[in-house]
Image 1 (cartoon, one colour):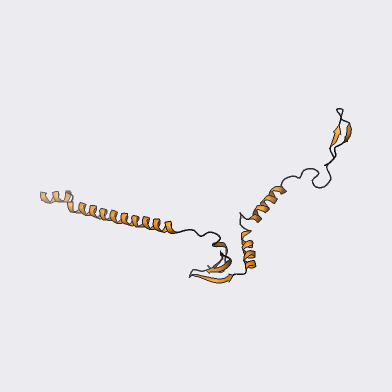
Image 2 (tube, helix red, strand yellow):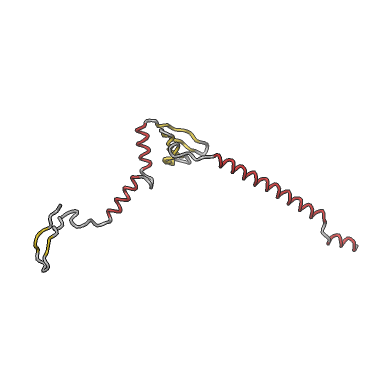
Length: 160
């Protein structure tokens, strides 16, 4: 009876070695997985290049009923209207007329914060809050005069 109590108190060497081997295998698998992810990222990101805005540019999007959206893309010298739904993407139309492409692209770009139209509006707003110098608008400013030491006017300063 004493012999059985000692077996229950003493840890089994077999269970400890099993835990160590499971943790070791798990560490190896996780290490290989992380190495694979690192290699894929390094290989894919090294070869991937962003396309310049002259090649493809998203000019804007609009939402329709449900979950349907349309995106207007500039691809080179044409515009492409694309429909995006939960089930996929489809081209709705292509605009190739140069004047229409420039007109629509201009309408889309003028609403952005870094467009020349926005910069012009901001400049006008800034100047609209400044007071105009006297004589600039409305009644004319008095002509400067030449005065003596006592304050009497001797003559007027000619413009020019």
